[in-house]
Image (cartoon, rainbow, N blue to C red; front, side, top):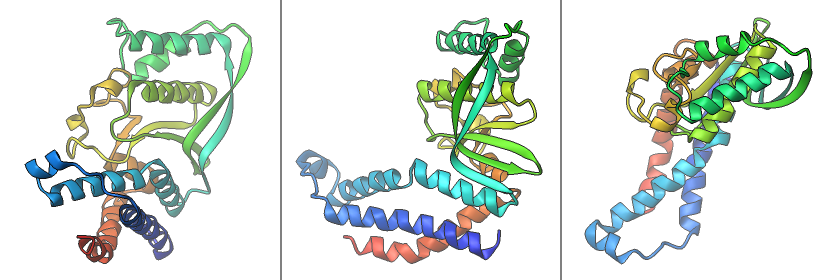
Length: 252
């Protein structure tokens, strides 16, 4: 990654920390006598700081960093909140909704596997009636003439968010068999490996441990930014942390 994109990404990280510091300074601290008595002033303060930082380091920041990473890795075009109008047969749309309804209701005959779901939809007899549906992708990028769409979510998405993401991925894949669609989480809160992921609600919709379109942590960043991207992002964050830790330390 060249220095231009490293600097832009560093600015995003830096602004997250600065925004958190300013918010903490400007907010009245909630009086929690039992928390303080049982824990300590420091524990209560840093807990509030972490919650505030997690708010700063949210969807917008992840999308912006992903956009910069895609551009740094040779994407000819890349956009956040990208709108695609898919032209889909009504029978396919009905089949997609039926698949997702069965997954939500936990019908044992319906597999969470992405490949199984997509193939069942494509085996539907078409009606000849076409409908237009608007799909918003958190990030779209075009590289080597191939369209790539990713739904970026917080690391513990709920079932409704995951259903909408899978619905959009299916619509895009049916509309354009040559595109790539992904469901991405910026890191794995349960460990380093994909098999470590253990948040149950979204796992009712995707086969998190085996679906190739489910990208978590390193897999997500390196799919967008190429081999070594994840480690480079951590290096940039570490460099910014060396600048910002003293500011944080002076809050107490």
